[in-house]
Image 1 (cartoon, helix red, strand yellow):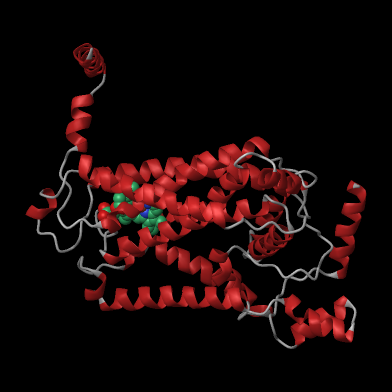
Image 2: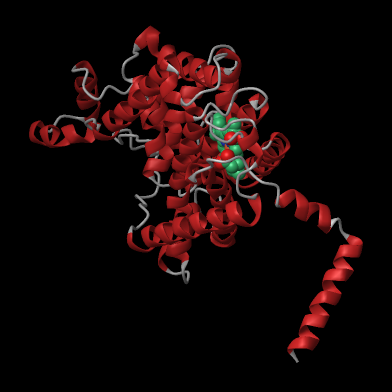
Length: 407
Ligand code: HEM
């Protein structure tokens, strides 16, 4: 019986060998990697695994989700409370998004640590930075989809920020909103971006990124001698085995978080609730915090100049840093710049997450029972939790009119 099975298997193998270039694929996969490759070299594969997991869980969520202001919030509630395993799948998707940002940033730091972005891998790096933008784009567009208060108001802020870009700002904001208000068209657009445009772009860019990775071969660590570059473990099965173990561990951790930490869902979005204190997802908090230091005519420095210059410097890093390849702590300038950026982003994120919300003044407000507009003016005047994107009375009236019309 066993022999017959083996024979059949051999037959299939021969059939495939005759039709596909399996032998050359096998030789390619078994090529040795550089020596001194460590666990940090699995971070890219973990990012890829998370991208696939997001695509798979997102595809299930799409069965029940409906991108309209009337149905989106109900659909998400239904997924979380009624659909079998719905809360778990939504949890995997929600926490998976955060894990994705963390893993991609760690992967980037690994590349910086061993200066793997240097020649000839500049293009691999540039496509990596584009992927980072796509990952953040997934986060931004996905945040609106539950159509709850935080989704709506964070998007109001995000679109306002985009509108401050010189020249094209207003146009970009209009395209994002699909008109002058955030509403049904905005939700459709964000849904299309989140589920069609960005996934296609992401998989296309990952394809190019991986092509470069295979074409140039792994850079290994700077301590490899030229001979050691070809005498490490083979990619298959050794590295593949380590990557798969990493993926399993990551999945178990994510599954535990998805099971035990509920995904937040606030009340349905209320465009008239101008008291709401908008908060973006945690990985945009540093940008959000940055805005608070640049008010009035200087606002554009926080909303446009610093983020754009920062991104351009990151994109062209391989052409700006021309030093010899070495580990980060042997490159004093790179070490200083990286440390300042990392510490700066972490501190701004913590400040952004812990800074007082506008609502924290609510207790005082209730005591004095002042009307809402006065409270907001006072808060801003005190320079505390300053937030420059409060709706004007006209905008609130406009939003109310739209709501009444749709009822
Ligand atoms: C969805 C996001 C990404 C995926 C799926 C991905 C995937 C991968 C994989 C599988 C590798 C080979 C294994 C490794 O070295 O870890 C790799 C290498 C590389 N990645 Fe990424 N990556 C992503 C984002 C980024 C970002 C944000 C950057 C930097 C800005 C980047 C820059 C690089 C570079 C320069 C290499 C070559 C490293 C070397 O040869 O040592 N990648 N990437």
